[in-house]
Image 1 (tube, rainbow, N blue to C red):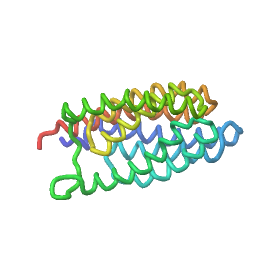
Image 2: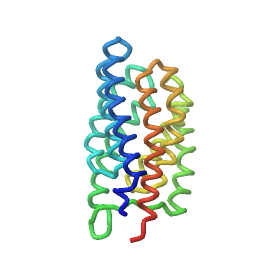
Image 3: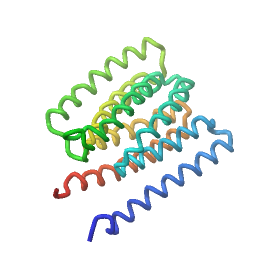
Image 4: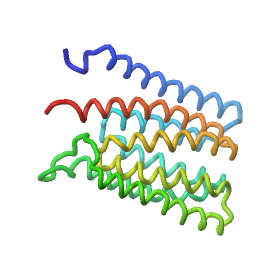
Length: 221
């Protein structure tokens, strides 16, 4: 029996599809009720679909990601979450890089395959995250940003996760899970309730992504 035919695979696809549909319905309801802007709703739905495609290892997550980060740039600017606003610019560049890397980053310019990270790369990312977080915390405080510590920490973790994702490394999902757990209360505190719901959905998708990518990486060649 192939993986595509297993009950766990079917259940996984059903959960991802159900979450994506739920995201669309929630966005429409909250915009209609006046609890979210249309711009936030667009970012909300495109973000969910983008993560779904990432879980599936589909390279089209990157062009959709470019749309998503461009939209969220303006959402975070309005909320004065400057770290995440600046992060969208970095994400835009990293999404473009990731698009290229997934297509041509393998041996002899072949497509990358899902695999585990080496200890040295994980150590480098582990050191970079607190250093970046400290620099961002001081910078955001000087700029008068809101929730500067939480903003800096989540931004640093997300950058590390994005780098590992661009390299198609399983361990990116561990960082996304941590970031998503921290993002939910941060966005609630800033009144971005729709985005907080999205990151709760992201958390579920990240857990599924970790399991799916780990099975892909551990599959015999």
